[in-house]
Every structure is written in C-alpha cells, then in structure tokens.
Image (cartoon, rainbow, N blue to C red; front, side, top):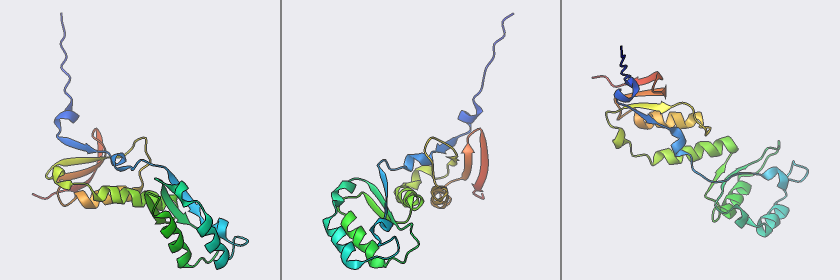
Length: 171
C-alpha cells in the first residue's frame, strides 16, 4: 500500500511579503569620536588648544566612515566645538552625527528607509522581519511602520509563520 503525502506550504500561499529591516543597513565602518580626549583634565575645553588640535589632526583618516561625535565626560562643551569637528569631518566621512553609536545607527537607518519607494507595497500584506544577523534599532521599525501604514493592506511583525498584527486597513 503506497501512501502519498502532499505538503502544502501555507506561508507561501498566504500572499505575505516579508520585508527585512536589515536590508536598510548601510555598509561601512562606524566610529565614535569622543571629544573628552580634547578636554583639559576631561573637564574644560581650551579654545586655543582645541583649535590647534583641529587644525593639525589628520581628518582624512575618517574617509568613508560613519562618525558619531560625542562627549562622554561630564563637561560643558560649547556647541561651536562640535560644529568645528563636523566641519572638518564632513569632507571625508560618509556621515557625521552628534550622539553616541546608537544615535548613529538610528540616523543611518532612518536615512536609508527614507529612500524606500513604498508604492511597491501598495495593498500588500507585509511582515516586517523581527530577527536576523544584523542588530536593527527599534527606531527603524518605527520608521518602517510610519512609512508603510498609509499604503499597505496589513502590517505585521515577526516571521510569516508567527506574526504580531500591527495594522489592518479597514475596507
């Protein structure tokens, strides 16, 4: 007696479109520039010394990198100091932001997601993938939700076999 089994892939037949937020991860080296190293006793910014450092530093070594500029010391740093760093880094770095590594990732993902043509997802049932090899900041999920909600039929989070409903268009 021969038994024939037919397996049906219900996920494939569901019409769900999986969107992986990791696809918006810009490749490139990330660097955090901490201005505390330029402070006298990690407390005070001496303008003359700082300007001399900025003038003599090799900013080209940040070429092609994503740079976050921050100060991890408990010091008051004037805004112009960060502006001066941004001015020197901008010709070389792919991106310069004020903040820590998390802020840098948020900015990079948000800028990448902003380029997404959502029309390709119009009236589709979308699952935003929840896990992967690349850490995705929560801000990326928020940006994707804001961008996709106006055009999609439904929006879910997770994997096609196990989703959390986020949004469903009313008919």
